[in-house]
Length: 130
Ligand SMILES: [Zn+2]
Image (cartoon, rainbow, N blue to C red; front, side, top):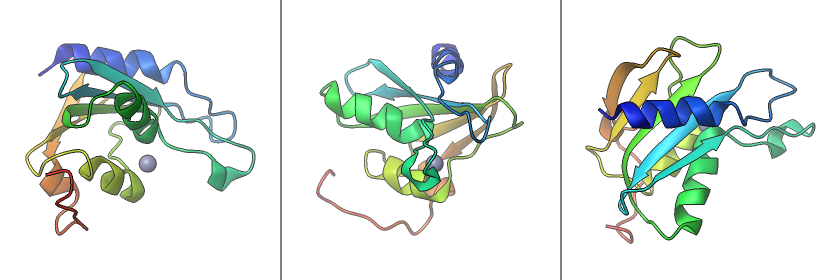
């Protein structure tokens, strides 16, 4: 990969707003427009109202005009690996393909590479976005 994607995710993690969990997470997407979109988790004192790093990055990708995730990196400060949570797997799959690579990183680099199919087999699908 894609060293730049890992670095972008790590840099994004700095912007996390995680005063409650104290658990910063960063994500970076390489989109179909060849740009990198990043995100961090943004928590709220009303806990269910916060959101993960992945949807932040997806939001920026969509608002930037891109529509497909080519590859994605996720990193968390306090975890050796940070696989996307269940909800995020569904959110990512909406804009990814079964063979889209998701890089699970630690603070040094990519520790594990998984495809979307491996992360979310038998996913709830729509053909709308192809
Ligand atoms: Zn999540």
